[in-house]
Image 1 (cartoon, protein in one colour):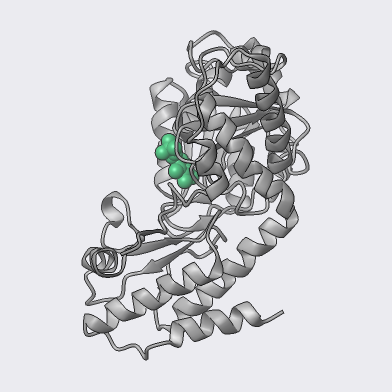
Image 2 (spheres, protein in one colour; image 1 turned 90 degrees about the vertical axis):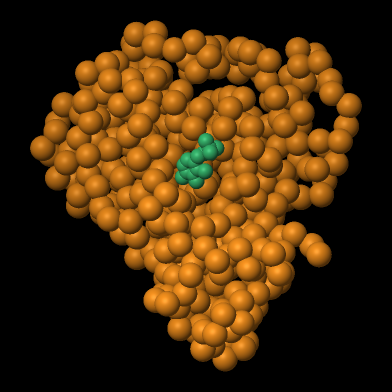
Length: 377
Ligand SMILES: *Cc1c(COP(=O)(O)O)cnc(C)c1O
């Protein structure tokens, strides 16, 4: 049986990228290695839609988030945290660890933080040094309006620091045009690589704050990465095999074109949502993003057992809810190297296991709705 991965990280990796990973390991300080990193950095700038520095850190995505917090904030400084789920809570954990003074704007799981909420938080806290947001809240499927957030923060001294770990490369995101001061992403979501690299873009407003900040870290000090990247280098031994492989995956994005990539994900998200509705199921996110579709487990259905059956019988691996959401939602990723026919397969498999579990669904309704939505202009 084939195993098919539909988790919102890690995601499937293209064949040409996997082949890169099979090649002999080179020396990371060679001229060739520097040329590869330089090329990767240029392609990252394209994906981020920025002309600013993008640095590469060998860590999971959280390492990039940690670097953003610890490099730009001193203990006791006030920050506004916008949280709508588990990844907003990840920001909170890091902010707490570094002793910042957190003002929290929180919405229930499945809801989105609105620009109005940020506007009043900024008004009430003119001394806030930074705002922390999440582009795609992968734990609930919500996408946030970063364009509107950026309009608000750009009028203040506060930095807008964005976790775009599953959003970048799946949802429209304009780092420069939207005034996103620091943007963090990871390699194993829409960027089509195994886990292991984090990428962070930093603009001039953020560098000013970072350069005046006390030293609070060593490995994750963004100043070190800035200095090195000017020479197309890294401060420490990087995962150079992954860098080479990431270059291959980004070439795929370059060839497709970023606008086409956003449109492809939008089309896929739209069709997946149509399928869910046609199956009589409910979408969990009030403001869904296009990288993944999150489905509310219907009453009377054992959510976790259904996913286990899908995996065991048919090889389809979707993600359960995390922590207290376990068994309550199903998360179907369609970001990155996943095509419509694979998603159609997942919908067919979900229909099947639900029917086998005694749930009343007409076979093919989800599949037909997906195709209908996909065919529409
Ligand atoms: C996956 C994910 C993370 C965590 O990244 P790691 O690579 O596991 O450290 C953080 N934020 C979001 C939005 C994510 O999707």
